[in-house]
Image 1: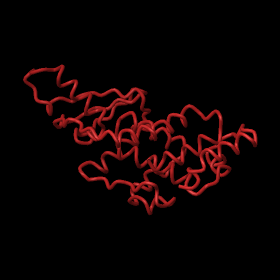
Image 2: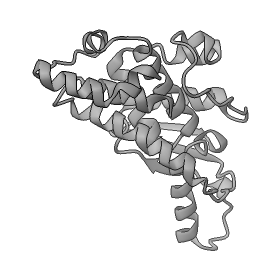
Image 3: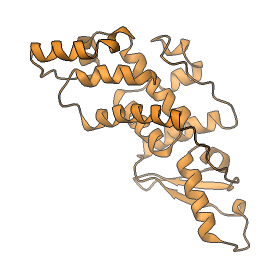
Image 4: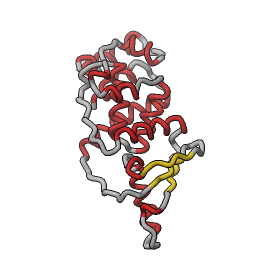
Amino acid sequence: TFLSAGLALQSDTTRRPSKRKEEVCSISLKMSEAELGGAEKANTADPGNVTLVSSQGDSFQVEGNVALMSDLVKTMIGGIEDEGGSSGSSAGSRNQEIPLPNVKTEVLVKVIEYCKHHVGKPVTPIQKPLVDSDMTRVVSPWDANFVDLEQETLFELILAANYMDIKPLLDLTCAKVASMIKGKTPEQIRKAFNIVNDFSPEEEAKVREENKWCEES
């Protein structure tokens, strides 16, 4: 994906990146594998209203079609319906509760905001590799403004989008990180992401040589 090269360059500038940044790098690689897989997921009937519960116990009731933008929620609702069997009540008459233990309240609010804005609207795929570091030239003004966030919140949103399996949101947030890296030298990337370089000059030269393709792309 457009992020793989950028985050490979970022991770190569430090020997011990933070756990969150390691997770973000791992996500970018999984995205490539998912794109190659191409497996179709089963459709789930609109369940009516759904209550999403954050890791802090805060509940948010959203319309079913908004919640179903998350393939995780779609799968969990399918499992609930299977367990419920033929109870005589329709899916739309129930308010199903979906716990999201890996998503903080403030991040879940952002996820819901994104899903409400994009529900029922086809999302234009983001061109890969990223064509410009200016997000307003890559995505819609709304999307560009949506991901104009502090780094910590942006990384949390990437992890939430990956956990909840919302591919358009994952693509958007990863593209934002890629835009922050695009065209920058390793030194500038270290400064932008507060990365401490503990490579010796010889080790760094070796890493640069091995990953020259990152800087050329």
